[in-house]
Image (cartoon, rainbow, N blue to C red; front, top):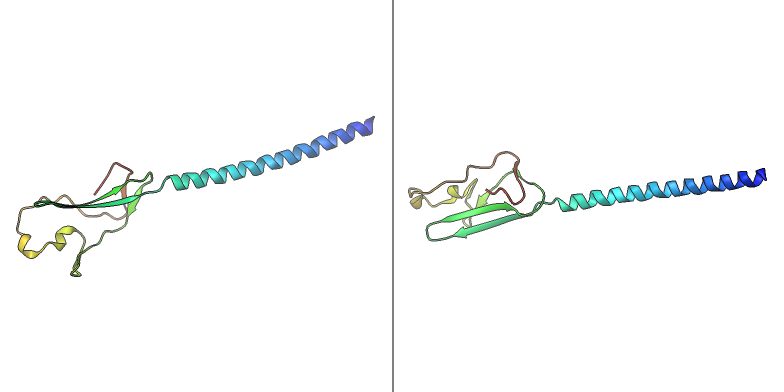
Length: 120
């Protein structure tokens, strides 16, 4: 009788250890899956929209994703090869004397654009 009880106890113990190991493996896989989901869910989606009207030009940079968009720098260039840090650097000299409303203040080092809120 005592041998049977010990055998049942040993079998139950081995079974519980196997179930515990299985539970730990499932928990680890679940954590990895959650981390991957969170990482893929919080991605920035950069949207660049240019507007060109008779008396108004603009370029908007928006973050349409769910994570923060980090801008390290912005470089503007035109077909003639002229480069600058803003659209104002690319304006022809004959129209630079015209009145314009300058909104763009420049890019700070590592500028962050929050999702669906900020734009440049």
